[in-house]
Structure formats: structure tokens, C-alpha cells
Amino acid sequence: MQRYTLTIHGGAGTILKADMTPELERAYAEGLRIALEAGFAVLEEGGTAVNSVKAALVVLEDNILFNAGRGSVFTKKGVQEMDAAIMDGLDLSAGAVSGVRNVRNPIELAAEVMRNSNHVFLSGKGANDFAIKQGIKLEPDEYFFSQFRYDQWKAIRDSDNYSLDHTNQDIEELMRDRKFGTIGAAACDKNGNIAAATSTGGMTNKKYGRIGDSPLIGCGTYANNKTCAISCTGHGEMFIRAVAAYDVSCLMEYKNMSLEEAMNHVVNEKLVSFGGEGGMIGVDAKGNFAMLFNSTGMYRAVKTSEDFQHVAIYN
Ligand code: ASP
Image (tube, rainbow, N blue to C red; front, side, top):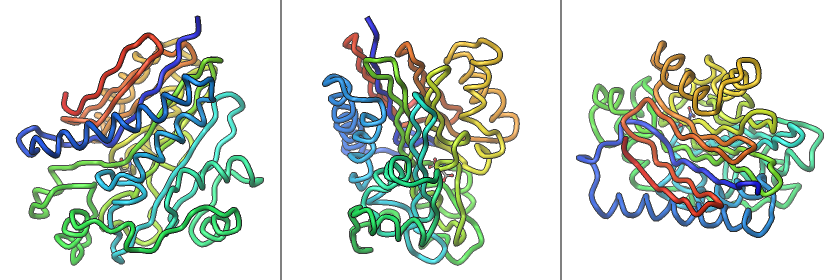
């Protein structure tokens, strides 16, 4: 029987138990578990991998703890600009948006670009205008505000530094102690079709117009039934230079590596070789999964039709 699987992440980075309170740890685990259940229910009911990853991401975007949708980080200008992408491994259709503002669920907008536009990627005002035209839900600035992200931004807004989703420390420490709160999902459905999706607020104090790896097809997000569906999290600039998600697919397609072998090569060798901190999750069309990272932690969870469920944060 075809195994079906959903794996999700809520960001990777320097996530240390010593910095966590038991309450916060529980809140993160609970947030992941609720998103996992929402996405897995779609698979159980015979829904598509695309609908499963979308359902999981909507739940995480609505959760203020994660750096996507509500709770997104602040840019240099003190606003939230969000990126998202979704890809269907069945026919390689894809949709992506970058620099969108006030869109409650950027992943819904990316899916709308995939299904109902002639394009793959819309950015900025064009993407926002498309959201309005398609009746995608918008929210006022206050909806996206979180004190935690605001304080992170305040600590570095007068500098030229930009930082991955971090804790309250001085700049030196911030640059060392990186946390990435991007969210993502990869699913294999009952028909053996696979899909991936990623959504993010990007990096704190990022420059106006900066685009990370998350919405770039092949960099932070990729899906192809022949190989794998992948969603990445980490220092976006490095993942772009590594064409990280597509590289996993290439190693599987052209070198016959398994998902785990290919992902291990990209995460623990290629990215490490030029300081690309972070991780990724993925599935193949047989429902195998992998969740690997080269940082100290990655918020992650997986559930399979074989009754296996796992939620974890640290190494
Ligand atoms: N990869 C994201 C970016 O560079 C950040 C993250 O994973 O948290 O925008």
C-alpha cells in the first residue's frame, strides 16, 4: 500500500534548551502538532499533497510564534514583507510571491498564483494587487505585530546588520546566535504525489526589496514526483547560492542517491563548506521522509500512515 507522509518545520538555527522556558518549548511543540494534524487530516481523507502542505502552513502562519504570516519579523523600514512558495511534484506547477504586505496567509496567495495566474512568481505591489483581485484575505498592520519580533528589530535597526530571527542580545551575539523561524512542509499523498511549501517573514532588518531563498523555486522550495519535495530554512543567501532544494533532487535523479543521502550531502557537506547554516525537510514519492540540519536545532515534526509521529526541536 502507498505510504502517505507529512513533514513540517518551523525554522532552524541556534536553538538551545538552556535559552528556552518549559512553557515556550511546550507552545512550539503544540504549534507544530496542531499544524501537523491539520495537514495530515487532508492526506487521510484522500486529499492531495498540495492541499496538505497548504493546510499545515496556514495553521503555522496564523501562529504568532513562527516567523511567517502573523508574527513575521520587521524589515529595516519597520514593516513586514513576506515571501512564500508552493510546488506540485505531479506536474511541476509552482506559485510564489515575495515582498507581500498585509496578506494574512501568503501561502494561499502563492497557491492562487500557481492555480489562477499564467505566471509562477509575483512580487511586491503586483502580488498584493493580485491578492485583492482574487479575494485573498488581508489584515491590518497590527495583526502581524508581535512584541518579541519588534524588540529583536529595535536592537539592530540603527545598524546595517540584518539578522535571522533571533533572541534579545547584542549585535555580536545576535550574529552568532542565529535562529530561523521560517515555516515549511513537504507531503506525499495516497496517490504517491508529492508537494512542498515554504512561507517566511525573511530576516530581521532586511533591506527593502530583499528576497530570500524561501520563495525561489529550486532554492528554498522544490517538488518533483520523480525525486523529492523539499522545504528549506536557514541563511537564505547561502541556500540561494547552493540552489539547495534542487540540488537534493539532482543528486537523487542523476546520482541515484536516496532522499536521506542526497539531503545529507547538501546540508552537512555542501552548505557547511561555505557557512550555510540551517536545514531542510523532505519526502519522496514512496512516503520516505528526511529532516536534517547543521545548526543546533530545527523545529520539526512528521507523521506517516504507518502511525509514526515525531515532534522535535533539538539535535
Ligand atoms: N530562509 C529564510 C530567509 O532567508 C530565513 C529562515 O529560514 O528563517 O529568508
